[in-house]
Length: 237
Image 1: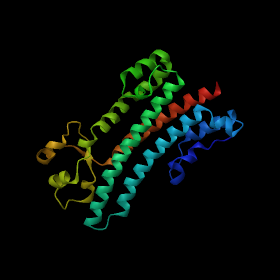
Image 2: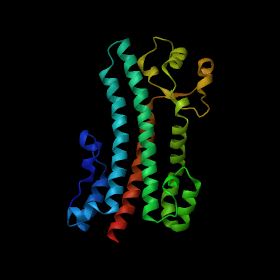
Image 3: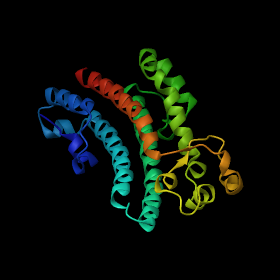
Image 4: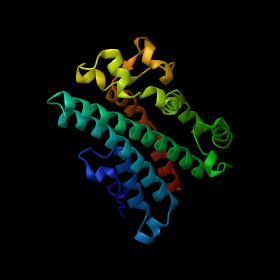
């Protein structure tokens, strides 16, 4: 039976297509489960729905950032509203991305019986990678190419207070009446320092948050595809 787990996520509320890896995974569930009780008590369904929900959240926040620009773009006041919303939604985006990474790590730990506590199941934990390569070296080899991306994203999350400065910093740098697109930006500079930006923002690299989403989305989808393959293998036995 189909579990339709992706309909219990933010994908149900948007026009974004459900990634194919989740549809294929539900096809595998359809072959394996014959009753609702059997499906709903299986840990793989819980893990799959959680992973899909976090990917849906990520895409939802990207949509909200884009939608804010379309809705508030007539005059200076609305341009500022779009900038305020963009910054709030981008913090939500970073949180959703971190949750997606943590859910992926938790899933791998569960599937491969890694001897770790719940709080230690994180890609940011070096011991997680050590336990994974020890327990399942072939699985570790599949995920290792994503470590650079994962490290970059988690660093962005950790540096979020510096990466997403208040609007006054952009006004100081670009001018109070600068075009809207400049006021939507965040820093793409690991050396950014919030307390120094008032006087040194001229040295900061700026980037549109949606450009960051374009840079990261394919990597997040690749991660989801890999996790879904592991869940399919677990279900197939």
